[in-house]
Length: 95
Image (tube, rainbow, N blue to C red; front, side, top):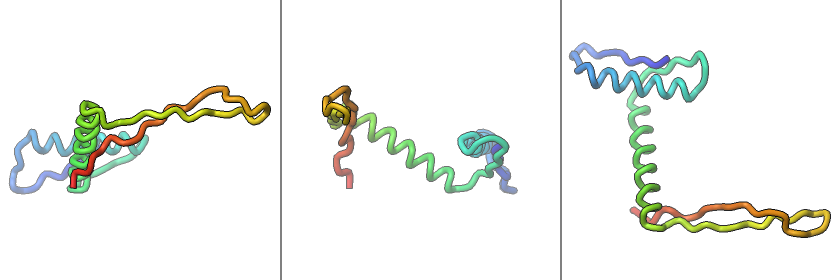
């Protein structure tokens, strides 16, 4: 369950609902029977997550990711039997 304590200044309803929803989503991520109250840390976390998603999307569009295949060797006969795919890069220095 997520909650937000409405201040006495009479904040507008859409803003109140957005903040309560942020708290609710955080509570769902933490697991069953969790209660989370909205605070500014939740808003900061959301901003960081959105920034990261936007940077990753741009990096993908700009071809900044590199993919590598890492061979997996079977110890019994020292033969390659499969490979793991890994991805590196994705962010140019943004300052």
